[in-house]
Amino acid sequence: MDAAHPIGIFDSGYGGLTVFKSIAALLPQYDYVYLGDNGRAPYGNRSFETVHQYTLECVEWFFKMGCPLVILACNTASAKALRTIQQADLPRIAPDRRVLGVIRPTAEIIGSYTKTGAIGVLGTKGTIASGSYDIEIHKFFPEARVHQLACPMWVPLIEYGEYKSAGADFFVQQYLDQLLTAAPDIDTILLACTHYPLLIDKIKKYLPPGINVVAQGDIVAGSLADYLQRHTEIDAKLTKQGRMSFYTTDDTTDFDNHATVFFGQKIASQFVHLDAAG
Ligand code: DGL
Image 1 (tube, rainbow, N blue to C red):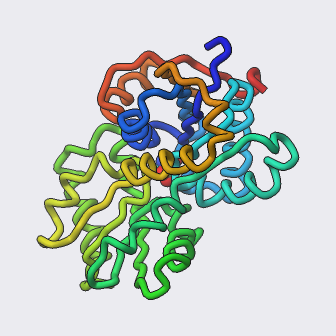
Image 2: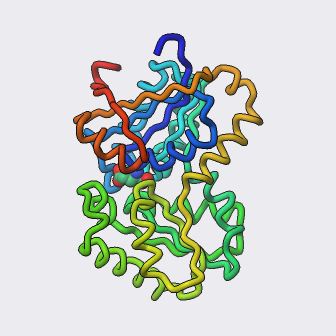
């Protein structure tokens, strides 16, 4: 990708492809590089220090690939690494580059979807334990009642291709029952993990009517479009030839097979060894 200055899209694995799909549909003119750190996924149960270290290594790789802007399309990385990267790492390693996450743009809007004021937030153990959604949503919607629940079985079900199986129904129903028993007035449920949109049909099946299930892709894409309009200095640096390339830190065949499901089209990824790239 000579002289390309793409937008970097990062995820611990495949999940960010659901966000990338929305971004590429809304903003097809830009060049993009996607990196899934599949070799070290899942991030969901890892410590702050580890998620920060892994995410920063990936961000530095994006910078070497010429990206002026990187989107952490992963809730766990956004919750556990973004703030440190923005506040401590970027001023030191790349003050003219930008790294954005998925939590703030989602928090800015999700409160406007609820009529009862009660919002359910479903995510990985790491995202939920960080409390990030609770904190961020209250900045924009102080009256909102945010009920969070970790759904640790959902990512493995999806990664092992079991998300359409009868076994998945059990775990979908189990977490939704738990959430709605704790807060029966919830009318808006946010899928705060980039994998969960693959379970959306099953999730809707086990919810009473009238509950709105929200995936993040379109929200993040809209927010990025708005950001690029407001930050013309970043937009001017980005190349716009509609090119896309995909990288993974693990097996490319596995990645390509999963990517077809998450991204909705066939792709051919390349392997990247982060140490060698660093
Ligand atoms: N993509 C991650 C997220 O949005 C979930 C997968 C993982 O645990 O690595 O939180």
